[in-house]
Image (cartoon, rainbow, N blue to C red; front, top):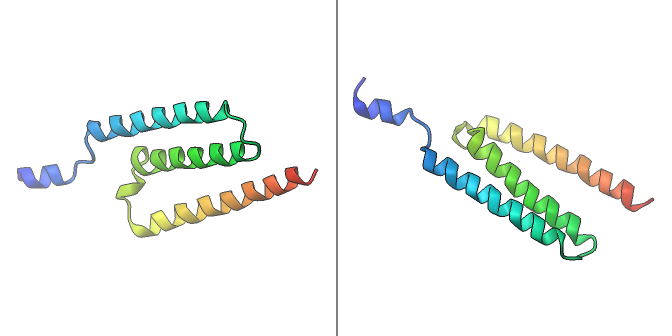
Length: 97
């Protein structure tokens, strides 16, 4: 096995993981700051949007979904879509109480 074949099979470097971790920390700080502002129902919407971005970063980079084939990516996307539907139904239920 030559050097090109060895480097081709390695995943991303530690720098990318540190950058993603730093992004997660920034998004956490944004979540905390947005929670101090009274936006009414938009507080929940903004918290869910930021949490979705954070979950996407974790799934794509730390769980290596970014480097998987299209079939697996599609299955994970469908699972998250179904989860979003169930969470939406929960919001509809609590809004009508």
